[in-house]
Image (cartoon, rainbow, N blue to C red):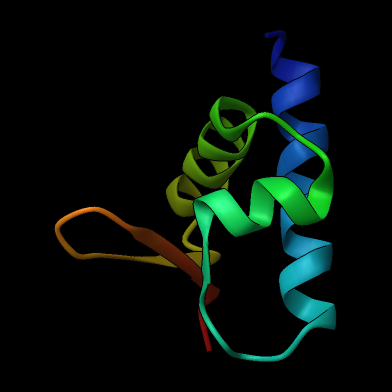
Length: 69
């Protein structure tokens, strides 16, 4: 996956989260909503996390993503 593609997915994630309220969404559900592979969403989320734009909450089996307030 190219850096440009990761940035594109990061933008899609940010747009989805900003348009759909403050409720955290799982990586698996986000991948379905964006019609992307789970790995693509993880790369994009990493980009946004590095920029400090999202929160990543984890439990034993699920990662949930939300925008930083």
